[in-house]
Length: 119
Image 1 (cartoon, rainbow, N blue to C red):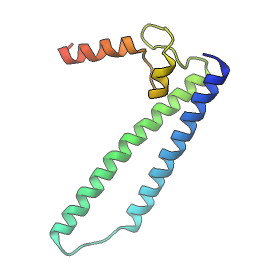
Image 2 (cartoon, rainbow, N blue to C red; image 1 turned 120 degrees about the vertical axis):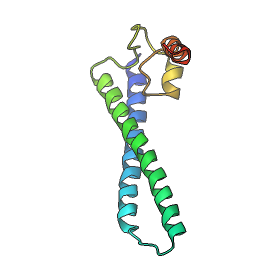
Image 3 (cartoon, one colour; image 1 turned 45 degrees about the vertical axis):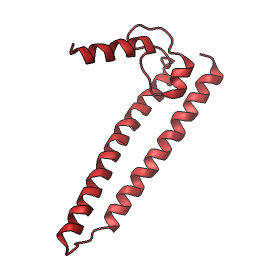
Image 4 (cartoon, one colour; image 1 turned 90 degrees about the horizontal axis):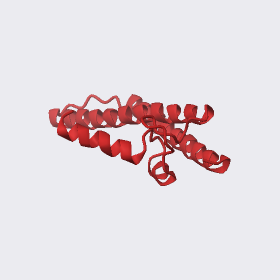
């Protein structure tokens, strides 16, 4: 992968991380402002369900931020874009679709097949 491609993916990862962090901060702020004690049990249940769903979404985003940080660290160490299993270069199209990918498409497909078969 050339310097221009590395810079391209680093930019994608950087802006993606920035968006996720902004969303997390907005959620925390909104939840702090939203401390309502609704008298109706149905309204409270609905609010708790919404809050639970929001927290699960933010937890997934927090994990994604960790993967983004790992990908950016791989860029810094010149390991980005190489499969963690077989060591070959991950295709640019795959990285465009999933910039945090750590496996080439063949290794990923093989792992998914093994998971489906119960190995």
